[in-house]
Length: 423
Image (tube, rainbow, N blue to C red; front, top):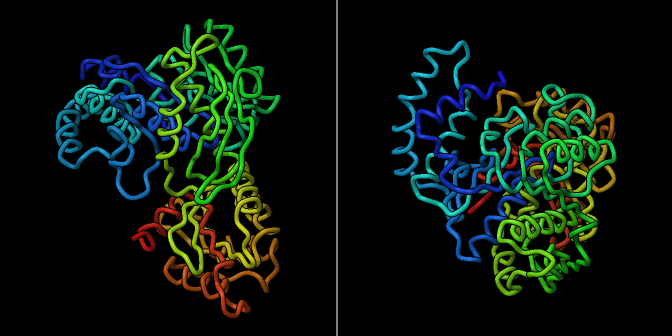
């Protein structure tokens, strides 16, 4: 990947700068971006706005990346916009040393789709980093920073400070920044960027946050401190403290966008309605029962720690088997070490990505951490699922309601499993 905004800027200029046709809420961070973006989208629609949402990666079809009013763009509209963009993209490629990337193209398609729709507001997730990401042509008025940790170090830097510096690049002149609680090392670059461009920042734990949460059937009930006041009895059909944090970020972002603050609170019933219908496929998503099979796309230690915490708090499994497939550039050992205390056994496999870690290599790491008696390897995912279910059901006579399988390690692994398991 060659990071250069020049190509995407040139393409968007030829398209008539569609990204200038609507206001945007721009999100970056290491984990939680997609879930937070989906919640923001759902809240905005509860207030009657037509929304465009751009997230990545996708689970089943590229059209998931470009959503209008909460639904993936239709095949017809996607094809129509592509036919408009493709000739101009070829023109850029012909006169450039480096071609437009896949992400450049999907970004241009999203921005053009939203302008054509038209939408009232676009919710845009960064693909990688921030400053040099293709989406950083927006100069968005609202910027959201989800928790920052170590990931994509080969491109963003080896320290949290370096990564925070790259991600804070989406903050532009006069923006309002909604930031999750960050590691101390990430705070200074963010605040320095805000001061440099005259941005206003609201931080979790100061201006907004989670006041309380209780586990409920199918999710959790929250009490949220927003920028404009307290919002009680808010149900979200998502699991884990990390999703409660994402909800607080989403609420504050929507409040800032709609002009709520110290003297004005949003309509509480509309907020409840928006959160109640929010979803986030592939994030502790239950796709089967007896045994329960959960899909979770945690792919770095920061994300896996949140998943493990949610499992311990909200799922009372008597026996849990983890099915793990990772990409070769990820901290597989870190993921497995976090899973070891909560998983009775692990089945390792290889997903369909060309960047997948070979199953033999992943098995070696798993044996070092779990021991040979708790590890099975299956190169093909259908066989891996069958093995994981068999292991989960072993030594558990009768009732299987307390038995579970967690498919995790990569969004690609989750997408592969979802195609096999989701009805």
